[in-house]
Image 1 (cartoon, rainbow, N blue to C red):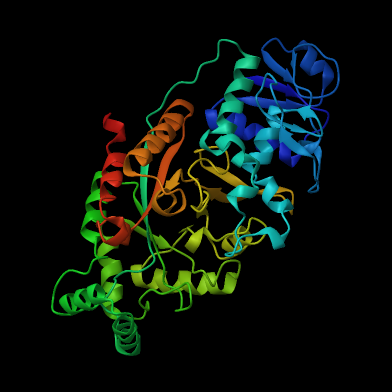
Image 2 (image 1 turned 90 degrees about the vertical axis):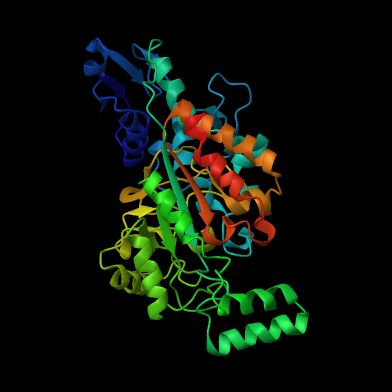
Length: 424
């Protein structure tokens, strides 16, 4: 067991030490008793400003606060921890808390959010020197453990590979009927899009829809039982354009997928932080698949740490999969380990489990404009980071991106490459 002395035990301290020790299955105890700490013969850490026996890390104040404050956070230069500094204090424990809780996202004015209301990668301290591509919280945790016990080594575990797929548009043409089909056809004729006109005609005459990659997803689900699918079922809107959930044929597709891969909710762009809308979409999908739904991932990765996660909790979700940047690959919360969401506004740990993903298909192709070879190198580096520091390798694709269709021609090679990483 590791004994940690602190001046007082706070919800933030319990949370961050659970990550440092608990995630790595190491027993620990926090104490405010100086005599207990001084007489303890095992491994111990003094995380206070007091001079006591044993190894010490001088704390910044952030883990002892109860409110959200601006701590003048910077990369701390060439300090021994290679961590962040808070008002000039280099503190790896505070660095973990700050990154893991996405503290900086609570501080950004709404006027600086992107067009989708998201926290932009460019505003993150992790954007400096592409620090986001390192599992910083895990690295700091390992450094702290080695500081406490120079002989400590991580016992490696197999990386859990978790492919995930978002279904924003079940089909490109199939099941799109009536006014919607007519308007789409008129638009294609107006713009002279002969390719879409030809494809639509072929699909309506029995050809396979270009977005129909569900057999492939099912096969991946058989090979990787942890595979997850997130289905958009919200009402039609500017950014929510899937086939209505009321369509019986659409329901049949969802039910068929559920036989091989767990189907979960992709809350609509319109719902975002509106628990009533999220609950209605959850209920509609649950009625189709015939079981409760507890996992979600936001459409467009559109979430606000102040509001969206609370709305999900209110709607009965226990697991969330949106934690990653759209614009850049890497570790948005500094880890690939699942971790509880800490609600900074209420200053408490919640039961909502956050499952970070390491890359999204659109990040590679559309945001970072990487080639196939560049994508492979980036993915390999991310995988090695997870392999070294532990956690789950979760990655995000869409049904329309894995069929070598349109601008995604050739990109199925990247999915295949990722799935074979464990065999390398």
